[in-house]
Image 1 (cartoon, rainbow, N blue to C red):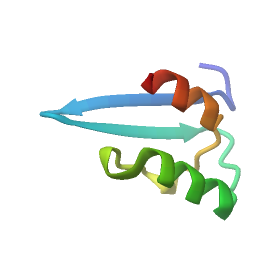
Image 2: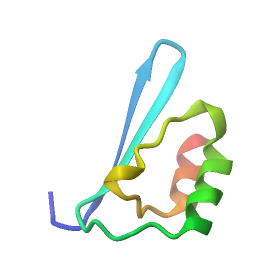
Image 3: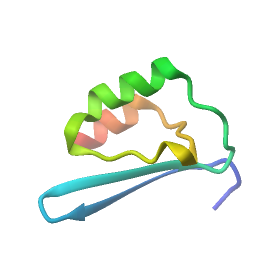
Length: 65
């Protein structure tokens, strides 16, 4: 894995999808981006913000289709 590459790991726990999103760059996540991401993922996902998130929201939306 290249340093700074964003990884998205999804684990199914019963009927519930869990998404762990993290980046090795540890760049702070802007609040407005965090709110948009939470709004899109809603109750179907759990996010671990302590690992800092920096993926493209559009990519997550495409994967859900």
